Length: 467
Image (tube, rainbow, N blue to C red):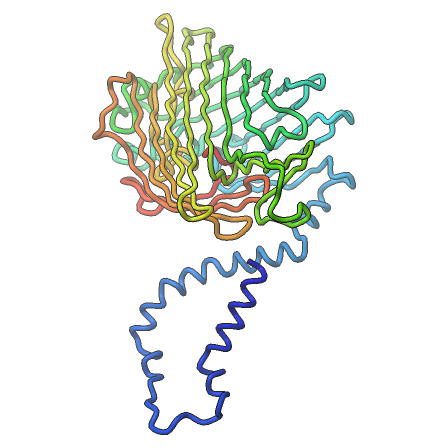
């Protein structure tokens, strides 16, 4: 690509009218002047879409090239990390999100105790009653084997109108035309995970993975509101169970235990003993590993061109004040390369369901939701809520440059209390486009615009990728 662009530019210059005039210095006798055809108003109208696209993409492309040439990411990282690059503290800015706009710090350590243990932490302050904090400790090779251990803590205190807990306000402006927010939530989750995966060591990120995770933890939920006489919320975006707002005004706590199974062969490519180019050659967007005489391709989860993901999880939760429920989640993703190289058709189906046990209930904050940057993107986060949620998504993806790509997406989703409640006429539909910025090995940032019945053009960005 880098060698082809100068060649195309040279051909374009040599074929231009300016260079053609240099051949004999004078136009032919009797030649008709047709330059007016290039200056018509129709040409300007025809060029307008391309001009708008160039105005959007050109600055991003120029900055990307500048960053690569000057090694800007590495230079910025060195300011906030130690010499070994194993420890760093970064300033953090949040735009929107669960606590709305705020700032704070993030911390990482990739070689804790000098034994390869990982520690990540983040704290965001938006206001006295809008804060969040997250802490993750990970031992990726427990005792040098295929087992891993994770300890995760998450704290959230918010009454923001942008919070998932207040998504119903965005979905029912007819009921709350003057309310910026409806609920306030304080929650704490402490989770432990003990997992096993089929491939470790050098080939962990290059080979398909079968994984099994035993997980459990302790959670608290304190949901409150200042609104008196909350009207009936039931409708297309809120089921009868969600409309009853289970747990409102109660300080709840419960323990839970669960199991997750997953098969992941996204972007897995056949192992080969021969290459068309020497290993030193840099394949655009590809990372290769030589192991025992065979060459393995890195699985680019940010832009998989084949394979898929299948996972299922089951959790059981019990606590005081009649909190008692089971939680089921199942998802299938598939990716298929089309007849154009690197063009990908991606599909996704996900089902989440909560089952109350022994006349108990699941807190409102634990009911499945749709809406936001990952699930039903054309709606505000948490717009849909019920005991169950069904999501179907289809995307057409194509690469723009080595480190960024674009996609067109179509999603359909619905919430329900019982599987028999699913109605083809009640699906929420959204279409849109997004641009993804990534490295050769990881997702960085996504920018999107989406359309739905609620939003003409909902703009947003994402810092993580589920699909």
